[in-house]
Image (tube, rainbow, N blue to C red; front, side, top):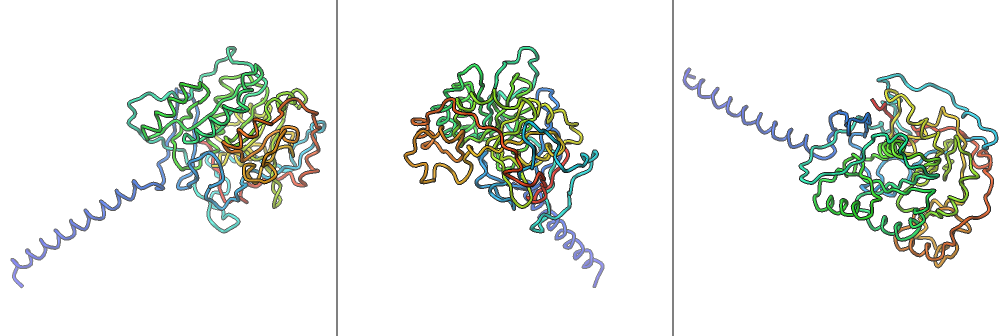
Length: 410
C-alpha cells in the first residue's frame, strides 16, 4: 500500500474517532442533568444565617409533606421507636450510652441495612438556581431578642405547596382557636418553587392569610423531613418565646382547646409528647404530632453543628438527637394515629370526638369539617402521664433498622 493510501486511511480513522468522542460527550452531559443524579456538595446560607440544610442524594419521596407514599425500605410508619423512659416524677437518662461521632465521621455510612441494601449517601443540599422575576419572601432567621412574641404553645404545620385544600380545611375548623393569646399557629412549606403559576398561588395564599411561612428549600420529590424540622425549630427560637412547641402534619384534626387547657398540668422541661411506636426492639415518637417543651428545642439547637447528626426523616433525626438527652416520654393513647381517621367506619357520623381524643391523624378536608361541627372541644379531665415502660419495654432507638444512614451536618 502506498504512502498516499496510508495517509488517506489514517485521516478517515481520525474523523471516526472524533465523531465517536463527540457522541460520548453529548450522552454524558445529558445524563448528568437527569433527575436523580447526585448533586454537588455546597452550603446554603440564607440572610447570613448559619443554617446549613442537608439532603440525601438520589433518594426520592412524595412531594407531599405527608408520609403515605414514601419510597424506601422503611415501613409506612417509619417514625421513631419507643424509648423505655420514666415518668415525669422520675426523670432518667436513656439506658444506652455513647458519644457523638467526631467531625468528618459518618455513622454506619457503608453499613448494610437489615434488607442488605446499602444506605444512600447524605450530603449538603444544592439549591438550584432559578430565574425568579418575583421576589420570594423566605423565612429569615434574625433573632428578635426581647421583641419575641410570648405564647404558651407554638404550632408549626408542615404542608406541601400543593396541599392548599388541607390548609384551608384546617383554617375553617380548629385553626379558629389559634386566635387565643396563648397560642400561635403557622403553616410552613417549601418556598423555592420553579413553576411560576404554582409559585404565584403560594404567594397569594401567604399574602391573604398571613399564616404561611416559606422555607428556603426546593419544592421537589427529595426526602427532606429532617431538614424541614431543623429549619422550623431554628426559625421558631428566633421569632417566639414559647413554652411548648407542637410539630404537626397537615392531616391532623387537633382538639386545640383541650390541649391548651392541659398544658399547664404537663412538665415544663424534658417533655416529648406524642404517639410512639414500639416495634422490633426500637421506639420513637411519630413526627405527625409531637410536643416538645422549650428546653428540648434549645438542647437540639445547642448541639455542635459540626457533629450534629442529620437524617432524611424528621422523627428519626430528633430521635437520634434524643438518645443521649434527658427526657420524659409521654405516649398519649388519645392520639389516633393509623389507619387514617377519614377511612374508618368508627368515625362515620361521629360526634364529640374531643371527649375521647386530643388529635386524629389521617383527617382529610371533608372529614376535618365534619369533626369540627361536632367536636365538643374544650377542657376535660387531665390524665396522668403513665410510666413509659408500661407501653414499651425498650428504651432503645437504632436508625439502622430503617435502611438509611445518617450524616454530619457539616
